[in-house]
Length: 358
Ligand SMILES: *Cc1c(COP(=O)(O)O)cnc(C)c1O
Image (cartoon, rainbow, N blue to C red; front, side):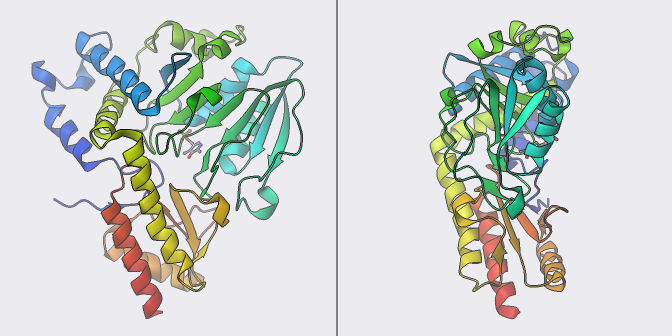
């Protein structure tokens, strides 16, 4: 059977072991005579999966008891609206740091609901970096929102900004890729389809006290409280996605948890950045060195023709997902947790071979 060398940006590669385990359990889940998709979300079998997923995520990310783990739907885009609906109170301003397209989208949703201000932006320089420092100090701020990893531009916060208000982060494309201090964040959200599993489930990690400050006039289904009061079982959750998430979390623990994952991610990214840096300008990275992402490596070749030829040759070697986002062009290799180092080695070798030939 054939598995491609998958550099897709999202939905993205899942660990091969996870796919095989899901296949093995699909027809008859633990002797129930049905797949996990075909049983009640209130069954004891699914309940065990649900709470195990929450506890494994707590263990891997070292989530303190002050914070809750919620499983929601609607993706990160839904959170763009949920966050201001719940936490942008009248008379307050929400602060956004613009580091890419996703941050812009989050800002747009908030702007349609209340008062917003841009605390810092790197748009003028083509989103090649994250801001070095924040100039304005937020006043009457509801929260400050950041995007921890900019999937499209290939930049990432190396350390998080110190803000005086509540910090909220869209971590869709780098959650669980490195050790972070969860207690610094009032709320973290991530669509699962980059680092955690398939699309369908959105993970929210939130400070319980902060959740208590939410506005209450929203429809029930748009309140975080509804999810926290019901342990994310208010209505039918995306059961299969949560099951897949649990398998990815098991796989993560088997590999040695966050430290092993972070070390592997460093090595993987290093292989590709080394190839860019030693190419004497043949490959030009989009991100400034101090803001480089360990998850999405973005680069350009000297011409459109060479880019097309590069991508064609890569495809012939079984590598998929390398064309850059339409707004940036060039190439992008997304090397999330599930992408094995052998795939990055294959790409680095191919990059070197292609450069020498041209
Ligand atoms: C992919 C991505 C999104 C969009 O996620 P959806 O789940 O499709 O809404 C938002 N933010 C970031 C950083 C992403 O990488």
